[in-house]
Image 1: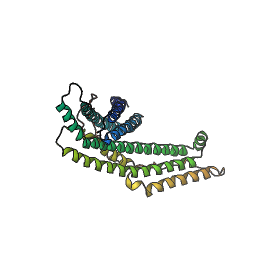
Image 2: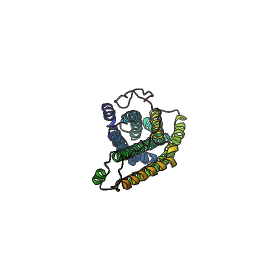
Image 3: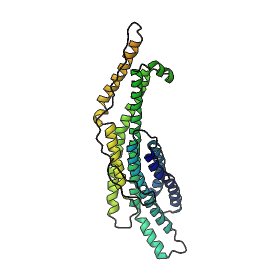
Image 4: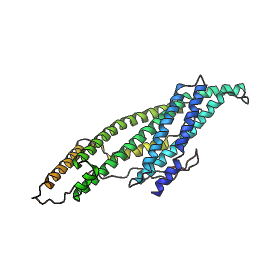
Length: 316
C-alpha cells in the first residue's frame, strides 16, 4: 500500500504540468499564422490525456490486492509522460524562436522557421503517442472495473452461503436476483468495451509505428520522446486484460456462468420460502478464477526529476 502511494505521489504533478503546457501551446498556436493545425489538436489532446491520467492515478491509488499491477503500470506511464513533457517543452522552444525577438538575427529567425516547418511530423508523432497512452489507460480502467464487479459478485455469493440473503436485500433494497442481474449486465457491457478498446488500441499502436518511421527518416534534432516505456505500459495492460478477461472466456462460457449464478439464486430463494423443508447452506463455486501466469514487468523506481528518469527493467 505504501509503495503505490509513493509512485502515485511521484507522478501526480505531471497532469497539471501537461495542462499548463497545453494552454500555452494553444495560445502560441493562435499567434502564429503558419502553425500547423495539428498543433491545436495536440493541445486539445494533451488536455484530454491530463484528465485521463488523473483518473488513472486515482484508480491505482485506491489500494487493494491489485497494488502490484498498479505500481508497475504507474511507473511505466509516468516514466513515459516525463519524456513526453520534455519533448513538448522542446517543441515550445521552437515556437518561441519563430517570434524573432530583438536578440535574434535574421538568419536565426529563418532557421527557426525552417525547423518549425519540419516539426509537423513530430507533432503528429506526439499526437499518436498520446493516443496510444489514452487507449491503454482506458483498457486498464475498464479491466479494473471488471475486477470490482466480480468481487461484488463474490460478496453476494458469500452472503448467500451464510444465509444472509434477507439482511443483504433489506440493506440494498433490492432482491439478490435483481442485483446479480444488474451485475451481469455490467459485465456484458465491460466485455463489449474490452473488444472495442482492443481494436482501437491496436490501430493506435499501428499509427504510432507509422509516424515513428516518418520521424526517424528525418535526421534532425527530434523533439519526440522515446516510446520504450509507453510500449511496455501498453503491453502490460494487454497482459492484464488477458489475465482477468481471457478472450476464450469473454463470451459463451462467461455467459453460462452468469446464467448458472442467477438460477442458483432463484432456487435458493424458492427453497427458503418453504418452511416445511430444511434448507442447507448454499454453496457457490468460486467463479471467474483462472490460472494466471505473471507476464508483467517489475520495475525499479524512476527518477522524479523532470525530464530524466531512471532505467526501467522488466518484471512483476
